[in-house]
Amino acid sequence: MRENTIPLDTETNDALDLRLALRLASLRADRGLSLDDLAQASGISRATLSRIERGDTSPSASLLSKLCSVYGISMSRLLADVEAQTPGLIALEAQALWVDPASGFLRRTVSAPARDFQIELVEITLPAGAMVNYDAPTVHGTEQHIWMCEGQLEIALEGKTYRLERGDCLRFHMRGAARFVCPGSSPARYLCVSLQP
Image (cartoon, rainbow, N blue to C red; front, side, top):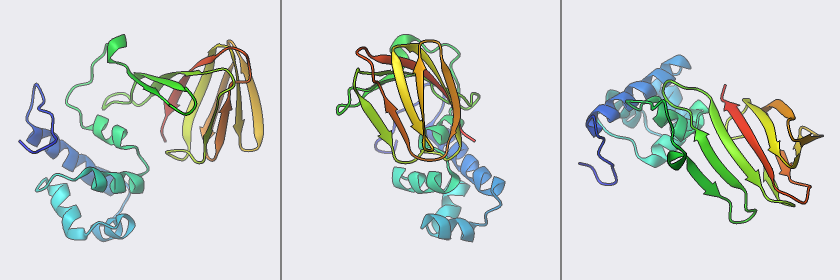
């Protein structure tokens, strides 16, 4: 077994590597890129790309990051596309939590994109007075729907500021910088549904 891999319960790591190789080849073909085109866009040699797509070698995280950047997808989306199974039930304790130490922003991934599911559902709690700035979207054109559960939220997009209160929903496509502010005296809790183009 290769270093830094986690054994899978129902399959070998080789099977996962093969599905990853096939998915990477499919992404290149879907975009009409030759190996030479992809080599130029990614900075990865043509020979290495060929070995990866044939499944002769497993790409490093650094190489995957470069390829994901060219294809305009996140690494989590790419890896979800090659998972063997997608669970239907995602128990609360299985939902990933992340806290931004700078702002106190709490992000719970309720339902991440997976091979058979394209939409991501995230619950976010932004502390009172907190602000989060995004210089650019991870994937340009990502569709988002923000539904307010509690508190107030101000979202600045493309030169316009929207103020949301409980029950309000704002839908948009991420195409540039964005700012999320909780102006009230209590936290803002909202659900964010995202769909990458």
